[in-house]
Image 1: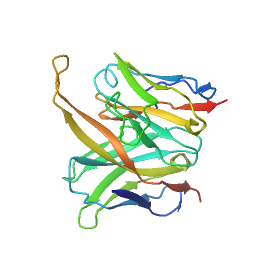
Image 2: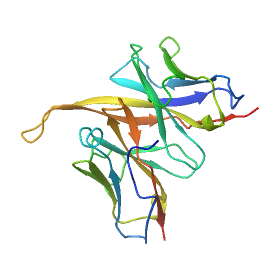
Image 3: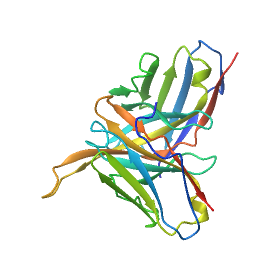
Image 4: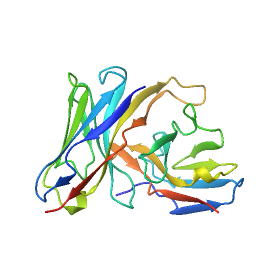
Length: 110
Length: 132
C-alpha cells in the first residue's frame, strides 16, 4: 500500500529535462526528508538522492531533487538512454512509524 | 565496501513460514549508525517496506505485516534475518535486504537540526514464490 503518489510514467527525448513528482502528507514528506531510488530493469534499487537534494558519490549532477511542503520532485536534465528505469520516492511516516515508498514512475527515453 | 547477500528457499508452501537471511560482508553489522532493513517487490509492482532492525535488537515493522513478521540480527555471524509466517500467494515477491543509514544534520539559521535516514546499500534480491 503506497502512501506516496507518483505519476506512473514520464518520457522525454535525449537531452530533454524530465521531472517526476511525489505527493505525500504532513506525516511523511511534510515532516521528514525524502530519498529517491533508481531501479534499472532486472536490478535492485539504487540510492539516487538522499535528504531531499543530496547526491551520493558517483551520481551524475544531471539528477536533482527538491522538496516543498508535502511534495517532492526529482529532475533529470540532459536525459540519456541509460536513464530508462523506474524511480521511487521514499520517506519515513510518523503516523505509520515506518518507511513508505512512492508508487513508482517509469521513465522512457524516446 | 559493504555488500549484502540474501539467501533462503525460493519456494515456500502456503500457510508456512518464509525465512530469509541477509549476510553482510566488507564491514561489521555492528559498526556505525546503521539499521538493517527488508523490502519486497511483487513482480511488476512497486516497493514495499517490511521492517528494520538495529543491532541492539530494536525493530520497526510495516503495520500491514506486523502480525506476521519477525526480523532478528546475529552479530556473531554478521547476518540479519526475516521470518514471515502464514504466507499466501500474495507474499510472492523479490525480497531485498538493505542497509539503512541514520545521520544527523546539525541545522542552520533557516532549519532546526534533525535526523535523516536513507538506504544506501542494497542486496541483489532473492525471489520467493509461495505455491503448493
